[in-house]
Amino acid sequence: MNYDTFVDQVARRAGTTPERAVDLTRATLTTLGERLTGGEALDLALQLPAPLQQSMRATPDGEAAQLFDADEFAARVAFRIGVETSAARGGVRAVFTALREALAGEFDTLMVQLPRDYRDMVEPALAPGATLRRR
Image 1 (cartoon, rainbow, N blue to C red):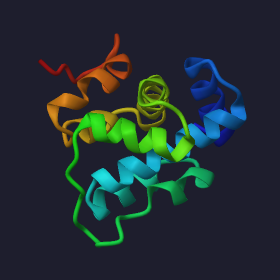
Image 2 (cartoon, rainbow, N blue to C red):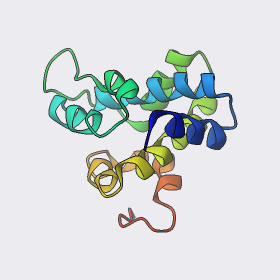
Image 3 (spheres, rainbow, N blue to C red):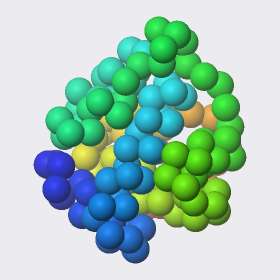
């Protein structure tokens, strides 16, 4: 999936402008990069359109993932884009859905690495056709 398509999909799903979708996407990917180990973040980044790869930089600590729950994930995204946490959650869902389409089968591998409480933000991306079902 190319960059423009990715951003357009996020904008459409989040009900926002393409410019705001770029901010939302970068904030979500940066936060996801903090939540994953350096190697996992790098693997994911290499599968994204080039303009988004920088957002998935490994954590400053190297390989260590920061362990935080889904509420903290949404709060970090909200802080980065200057909105309420509840508003950020919908945007994060839109980014995860675009990620699922961009990453194909790799998305399931990514999602099993996140704790169960991320389900609310990920569920829309696991809609029909998904191979991963979290219970």
